[in-house]
Length: 462
Image (cartoon, rainbow, N blue to C red; front, side, top):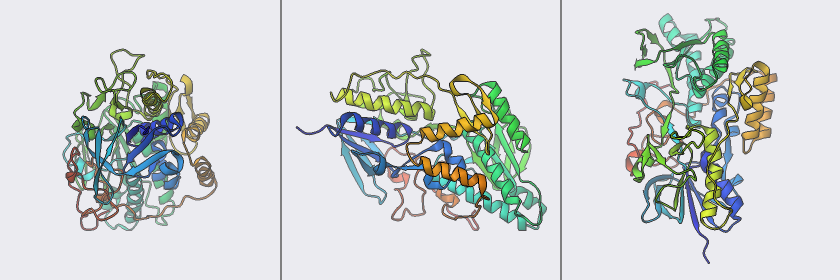
């Protein structure tokens, strides 16, 4: 008797957990295939520390072949999904197209940068969702500080030392906090002592971290302002140019750096599948199954999962939900194949949140208990070590070295700005002009993918 085929599309928090759970439950009785553009699971919450030079890039990547025993990895980007024919068509990193057949399909494609119709943002801003984007930001910020140190024009020097982050949610707040500390360490090496770089954090919300308890939000805002970050609530970007950004309050800020952290949207792939959607997410029942499709499951940011504790609402797009939904999806897929226990509905318990503010500072509310300062910092790092599915010792070692040694701040030059466009539908692998061997197929050649035009590297591109 042949083993049933299960295809999981996407290896983010939901897809990785679903694959791991399914392999553990089925114990070789199912053929599990994981389709993903990269061979690693990316632990997103620690990405700001990679950009800030605290963690080495490989620390936040967990090998898929090395940690998912019994799971076959296929490198590629999903293009067309034929639900009636039960097949997933994809393009591998070298441009070859192929397909995968299945008896069960798990859609866990995750999310991409959320774009708003603001003039110039797509051309001049960069997101912060992937490893290439984090590596680019680290190089770019380091380069701007170093170029400012030798700039003769005062306006140019000030613009290069001004950094604007849009979006004061988890990602934007942590990026501003970590990168501000990086630039402070960079300018200390400047013999001319040209002054402290300027960081701005903007959000239309009335306070930073509006998702958190107001006390934690107040703590985070106080820490950022004490370090000199210009936190502006009720304010965003009206337009962006090469020379700077026009704010909604009418002020024009000269800058060469615009980091876009306004949120995420479901991967555009799900729109082309032809399933019922809720704000771009596939509608599923509490068992993470698509109604009317017994062979299709969805979880994570790509799925609109009913919140059983708040009737009529869906669970938010967070890593915490995606990780837990992945486990339930794996168990329910196994149950649908008769290879596991009875299926169960997804119901969550809020364990709290943690925001790393750099150094030993953090804001956290584990199990609803609000913490700040050193206790919050210890809880936050302990949480990340516990949540990491690998590399725990290496991450802890990097943290120890950061505490006792000067930070290494050099440009690696691995990722250029045109390789990580903000409007890229699938930004995991860094893009290259012309799509040479070793890069993913350009989006315009993939059915079901948002078309983009990779920006050509301008003269002196940074």
